[in-house]
Image 1 (cartoon, rainbow, N blue to C red):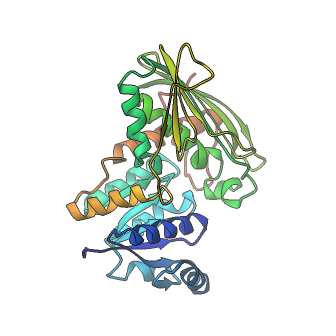
Image 2 (image 1 turned 180 degrees about the vertical axis):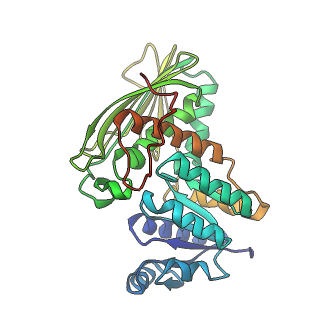
Length: 345
């Protein structure tokens, strides 16, 4: 890689535009990144996207973009169902990858992709942005300092009224609330309480198409801690997280992009004793891009913020939840959920 990391975007939807805004902002701030290319399934759509977003090169096929020797990092911004196939294309082309969450629809696909990346020596990262943000470390440091005593319980929710979108309602696109929204609340629980889980149970409401619309999830950890989570595509929620401890509680205003954290002690339940503002940002995506820049310069094959084992752990949990709900996507040859020891039976 040259001294400037050329970023190419695979897919030309709304989230791809957010990444374009990120790269432009980073470049303006003096970071060595370039909004180099975009690829879509048609040249016309790629050209229009490139013109609107200031992308240097537009390709009417993914294969053509991946053949460009000056592409350094490919950001995959397509529906979940396409991720595994597209990541394999990138790996065979020798291109480093930053793939949107959910990394793949199931653990089996992720294991295939990651094994191929190891074999070919290709860098690959999941773009689960809260894993890379300063807020993650700020929250964990506060809890480690004992500001709420011993953390024992957490609650988190993420709900948006988006079930009318094709990628959400279509099982062929690995739709549903879980892979799009539930992954964030599971990730928050993982970042705060870890992954030593002894049991998961859940209640779900399904759409007419058979994918999950709304779910509540309860997780029990080996040390006795518990998490209560909710995700839905049917309505909007406050998106907040609360961590309850023996000496107080902590509120995070937004599970997938925190702006502030408030601390309450056990005697002041209405007024916070402290509020911590998160650092200003471009979009919040810049932290995952910075991780890719660092890793490609140093020769790492995975980010320390979101190691491959963590990607697999979250997919294992989501597979277990779909087992509870009896949801299998049409492209899955067989149910991958027969040995899920996490399920509440």
